[in-house]
Length: 83
Image (cartoon, helix red, strand yellow):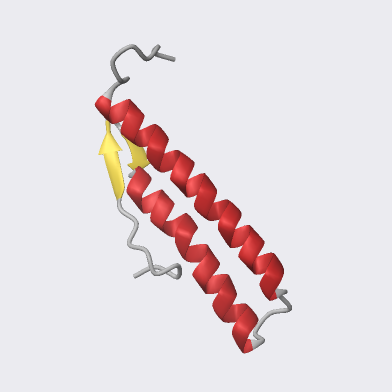
């Protein structure tokens, strides 16, 4: 188990190392929970409001990555232009 609580697995694709999008998005989402724990226990000088904003921003970014991965793996919808 990693420090973020997310199991990361490198995959060898054509001689290059890759992380699955699901692993990356899970890691991003876990940061918010870690930071909230630090703020709640006083282990860091983190403002809970700021931690919430940062966690929300990371969650939004993870959502964007998820959507982009789905689009790339399923292809464009009928009538949708390919980028």
